[in-house]
Image 1: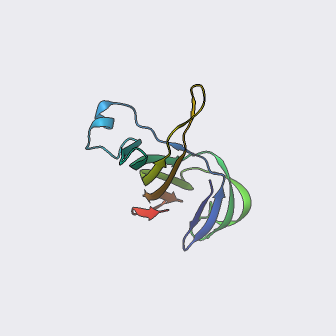
Image 2: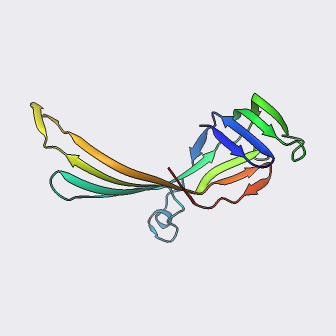
Amino acid sequence: MDITLSGPIWQFTLQIIEATDRLSQFNAGTYFHPAPATVPQYVYRLGYYLSDNFSLSLGMDHQKYVMKQGQPALISGVIDTTYSQLFGGVYLLDTMKINPSFLSFEHTNGLNLFSLDAEYTMASKKIIGILYLDWRMGIGLTGIMAKTDVRIMDYGLYNRFNLSG
């Protein structure tokens, strides 16, 4: 994944950035109590067959995405040297080791994917013995509601929830 950040004193892209999920330790209070519903990662999908062949489903994925620290990344762009003597300069596919004093980037307050899907299933056709073939066709609508926590060179950015995709 590539990350591009722009502001009044920097404009740069980091290439081939790795990230991980941030899983919560499993306990019933975290995963099954409604109050901390945004703490753990989860995937919900509810569906209903309106007829033998037509169904609707609604889903939500609540994910935690955290950029790995300590990884090398290719950087291209400009950082104003009056803002940061340590990181300021012009970069063209230079290698930089990512650390918290330079950048932290995460979606731990929300990377929420919502989806609404409609599907049509044709009757199963017997091919040979116990082998059957199903044909399914569908269409879906998906949106992402994200809130990103970004800290660039100790400058924290407040990011509100926004609709993406």
